[in-house]
Image: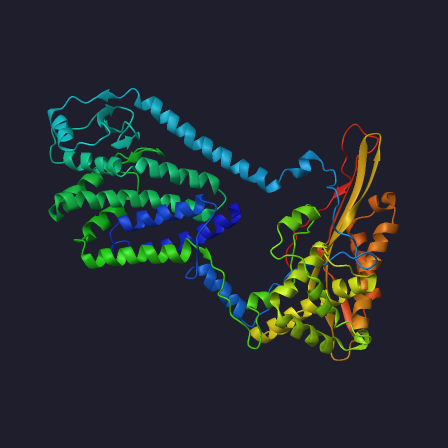
Length: 578
């Protein structure tokens, strides 16, 4: 899961917690909201999540897949066949400038994260330097109070003239730091102050504040995380106030609130990793104290169910949908949505055939598999309508999904275990591939009730390279296209294959026949114009081919005869689904 995905899911989770907090801050135990904020931090900092059918993302995904609205379609990587398609495998990575490999987003993220982290680190170190000047407190009451409140970690009580309100700091050797002007004889207020700070220490609030600061630094660009950080700190204080009132009884509300008001009048500055007695909005704290009631078993059960429900809904990821078999077939929705294997053949992600073979989900197609498929290659198959041929292929595929998948992976990876002549190879890799994808769109349309979508394809061409005096020049091209058939009942298989195959060959010929020097002088718009020209040449009233301009990636570099790298132009695009 990427940082942006984590940040987005965290923002959704934060929004839910903020809404619940606004509605129930004075109705549920305050610890409820601390647990929710801690779960938000887990969502923001851990780069994986547990899939759940109850996740809001599962519901959204299911809603989008079942709504009769336009949907993002799938890119299919066109297989490579000698003489019909451009070869896509076994190419070397083009040389690239070191600076081009550094993500602009990473630089921007560091530009925000580093200053934020430095702020917290410097603030903490500055506070530590000031706190070192604090003096031990010599008070019989304090010594007695410490004896009555033991912890495995030794607690120290000190005083300093650098602060105006009480606070705690430290994890393994926690310190309750009091203002030097504290009235040590006022035994009515001291128990409240010391108990409040004791609760901070007991709950390791310093640690959770440190984690919250880390989440803020990592997601500094996300305004929802800033809201989380602010409200989390406020809820820490509310939870401590609630704990103090629980210990001293409801009769202590007035005295404790009065003490908060007095402390707020002498409020101190920002201490990020310290638990400041009066750091948050005193109005909210006093309101919460005065509305506080005895916690009932019912409220505890509601809080527990709320935490479980919100966590399950917003802290989990979308689960794979159950296999819903389309009526009359052996295939699931997903299998019809993606009837053909889709290896990762995008630019910069090429794998060798050996590596791809190791990751095969199915073994190679057998002689029997291909013999059954080639029975569809009748003498007149090219004169048949696309609709009729596609139905025959669908029936063949419906007889055995595994057989179809084995052959699809063979085509995608160009890894055949049987001998095929050139006509058979073209039939399998061109006709079968196109009809298979069309069938996927057809059945998807029937299953969802949406209009049948046009199939989309990816294609990557081998780099054109040259080297002189130890320096290289290269060009790189990736493009996406789709086609629309006006009427499958009238268009023949031969006409369709000719238009698509010729368009692909035309692009390959343009790439092969244009020398490197001319290619280096071209812009991305020039290349797009040429691709569109080729697509239009092989389009007609029966089948129209569309080049997706926004999904064309044309990159070039020339560093020859130079002691440094000069980038003439590097135009990159994110390969998004069509």
